[in-house]
Length: 162
Image 1: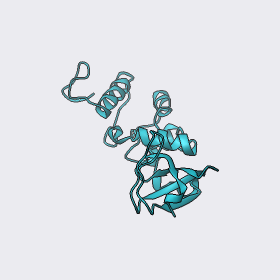
Image 2: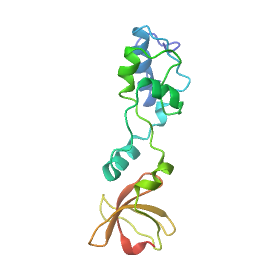
Image 3: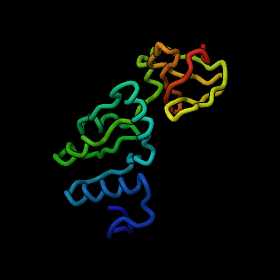
Image 4: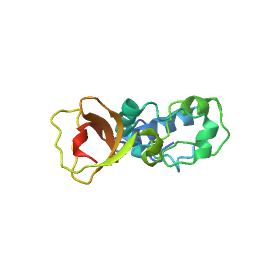
């Protein structure tokens, strides 16, 4: 259990801390020894994952508890003990954060902006000269779909890049 917090979550538990508190309480009630040293859910980039999945497809996959423990990635919740029924059940909801550097084979072209562009609509990209954009689709009307290193995605004019 979290030290000094035997009751419910207090005001100090914000965002990822609430998730850590919830998981810790669930596992403690089940009698499971929990090692939170690598529990780093506060850094999960849900928005980036949603954007990437929307435009590129399913990028992450559910991992069995044994694989989750073996990955030893800062964004993964795991414990040092053997995998029990609760661990496997909880592992279904733990996803590996997207490594945007490993997406090289998922875009069709890497382009550099030669002009600045400010989005007119919510589904468009805003970028500056020399920004890098990863193209995932080229539409016939000259507008392309892509994402930038920060995980922002949208439509942009293909004639503004080379």
